[in-house]
Image (tube, rainbow, N blue to C red; front, side, top):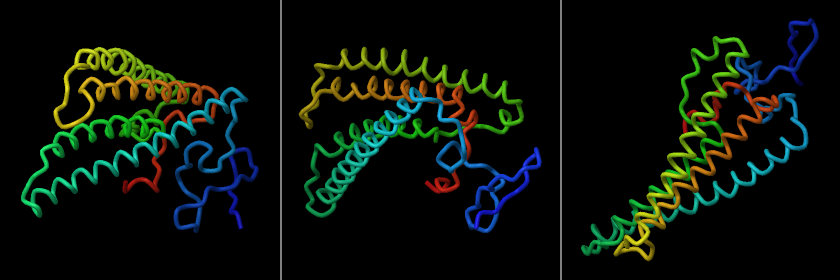
Length: 216
């Protein structure tokens, strides 16, 4: 049975159940994921959100594959050194570059869910118009960094190191550095999705804490 609590206008509104299922949660869950009735934003915003969900799934699958590769490489490094007594020279360098790729793509995936660390104590005390301005400034700053540092800067770095071969891998350093502009493009797209969602009312101005992910 769904519990109800009176609203400020005197009506009844469904309360969001807490984690233990025994009462209302003091903090509403963010966005539509918690089942709250939020604006859809129209077909254009819905299409944008659908595109983001598809990219999220592909990116999550890719990160899982890369992580599995990293585990295998590091495990073989330990086995070859400690068990076989003949360390594989390619494992250390390969693990380093695989970890870099995983970190950049994983950062983009977390940013899509607005899961990076943020100090929200002061912003939550502001009125909604000020929160909207602060959220816009934050997202625009992120877009500026992603475009000029990660996309343009990352592309220049990749081109400068394009012919720098890695003796233990079949790719060059520049080819691996292409992950910088790719991650920058993903972060830019996700930031634009956040901006559209905040102004369309489909996303919170201040991201709420997901209690289910606190231990991750």
